[in-house]
Length: 316
Image 1 (cartoon, rainbow, N blue to C red):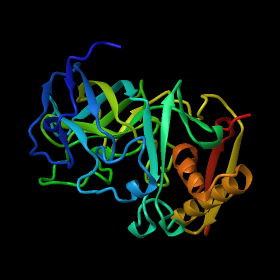
Image 2 (image 1 turned 120 degrees about the vertical axis):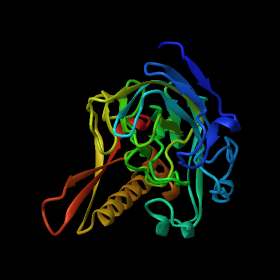
Image 3 (image 1 turned 135 degrees about the horizontal axis):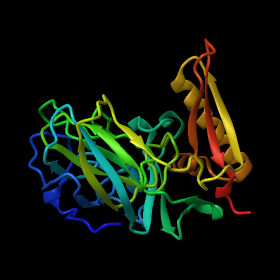
Image 4 (image 1 turned 180 degrees about the vertical axis):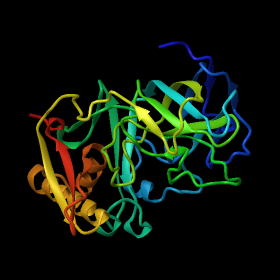
């Protein structure tokens, strides 16, 4: 991995909590330059390895999603594409997954969980340690990665946008290249909200959230024309990188969101009844390790969503 041309610490001067194209750049770089970003965790240090579910339930969301940047890339103009090559992601040995009290309406199943839940993961030797000897492979990626939008003013970091943002695509790991539409001069790129692991769906509203360092190389592409983010990745689509035994539960309904909820509810029941986890632990594990896939959207009036559980995460 090449040395970074620039390093952005997580000092307040380099951190922002909104998308806003009027923010002053933290650094200006040339195409081909490498930047190392120090990224805070998603709730900006409000919880830690010794925190409780009650602590997590009392987290303030004003502000949240600290992002490191923005980076001004010389030559990037509206209509261009910013190429971001993710060279390396380095965690700090711990992370957390939690869900909020149901009355906050966050996550996929707030109606099923009245009280908050929280698990602090020890991360070492390539795995995130859960309860009962369960180990989720660590595969770090930035949950939020994007450029500033063209529309003036402050914009919430929670929803993803045409220029990227909180996409939570778990395959944007080291070695991936992300292409982001440019809407502002210089692109004004920022990143953060890093995860050490996550299931496709991030169903309880958090992956394995972790403070992290992200190292990336930038380029400006005038030969590409895209409307929303695209990427290249050879990332494996199973935790071990090979075909392996899976346990699947399906959700079938005339609405894709309802089908998604049913698939996850069935997986929570499976983990509770067959693996001995509490329902709260099962919900957290689904967010960290269970992948959701749309199995069919053509057999009206019902659509099928399937939740996939890798059996390799369990001890023999």
